[in-house]
Amino acid sequence: PQTLGTLGQKAGLRIGTAVNATALAEDAPYRAKVAGEFSSVTAENAMKWEAVEPQRGTYDWAAADELVDFAKKNRQLVRGHTLVWHSQLPAWLNNGDFTAEELREILHQHITDQVTHFKGKIWQWDVVNEAFNEDGTLRDSIWLRKLGPGYIADAFRWAHEADPRARLFINDYNIEGVNAKSTALHELVTGLREQRVPVHGVGIQGHLGVQYSAPHDIADNMLRFDRLGLETAITEADVRIPMPADSTELEAQAEGYGVLLRGCLLTPGCNDFTVWGFTDTYSWVPDTFPGQGAANIFDADYAPKPAYSTLRQTLALA
Ligand code: G3I
Image (cartoon, rainbow, N blue to C red):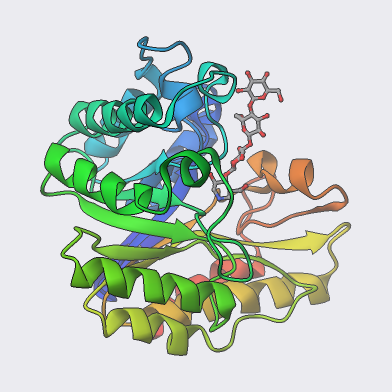
C-alpha cells in the first residue's frame, strides 16, 4: 500500500514529520506510524540547544541519537532542527553574562560541536531559525543584540566547515506568502549568496489556522527563492482549529494542507514537506494557543482526517 512517503517519492519529494522523543520511546502505534508513513524526520525538541547542552560543556545527545538511529533503520532522511534560535536556550546561556567575544565563541563552539556530532547523518540543517520580525526587521535576540546581524553569515560558515555536505537552511514562520517578512528574508539570502555564504535553502514552516486566510500566493513566494538557486522545504506544516472542530473546519484544514503542499509541488527546488507532528495527541498547539487544537492529519486515535486524504490525493496527482 502507498504511504505518504512512497507517494512523495514519485513526486520527487520527501514527506516528513516532527518527532516527539517521548512518544517515539513509549508509544508503539506512534512509532509504527513514523516508520511506516514518512520518508524524513525532524526532532521536535531533541536537537535544540537546551536539550543537547543543559549544562555548559556537558552534552546529552541520547534522544537525538535515538531518532537518528531510528531514521537510519527506516531509510529516512533527517532534518536537523535547530542550531541558532532565540528560544529554548539553556538556562546557563540565558542567565549568563557574557561579553560579545565570549558569546561569539560559545556560538561557534556550539555549532561546531553539534554539526560535527551528527556529521554525515543530517540531510538539511535549520541553521538559523525565526530571525525575523513580522515587519521584516531582524528579531531582537541575544544574538542580534550582542553579535550584530553578522551572526547569521557566521553561523552558516561555521556549520558548513563542520559538515560540508549538509544542506544549510534558514527557517521561519509566516513567510508562506509574499509579505514584508518573506521579502526581507529574500533580500537577506540574496545578499548572503552574493557574499558566497553557504546558505542552500529556505524553510517555510507552514503553521496555519482555519480562521485565517490560506497563503494562496505561496508558489509566487517560493518561486522567487527558487530563482535564486535555493532549495526550499515546507518544514512545520499544521493547521489549527478553534475547538471543538466541526466538519467544515476539518475540510478547511484539509484545504490549508493542500495549499502548502501544492506550493511545494509547484516549486522545482522544493524537496521536503514536513508536518509538525502527525497526531492530535502530541501537538504543541493547545499549550500555545489555548482553545485551539486538532491541527494534525491524524486524530488522537490515529484515524486519518480529511487533511490526510488531501495530501495523498495531491501527491498522487503530481
Ligand atoms: O522538557 C521540559 C520538561 O522537562 C518539563 O517538565 C515540561 C513542563 O512544561 O516542559 C518541557 O519542555 C517543553 C518542551 O516543549 C519539550 O517538551 C516546553 O515546556 C514546551 O514549551 C516546548 O514546546 C515546544 C516549542 O517549540 C517551544 O518553543 C514544542 O514542543 C515544539 O513543537 C515547538 O516547536 C516550534 C519549532 O521548534 C519552531 N517553530 C515553531 C514551533 C511551534 O512552536
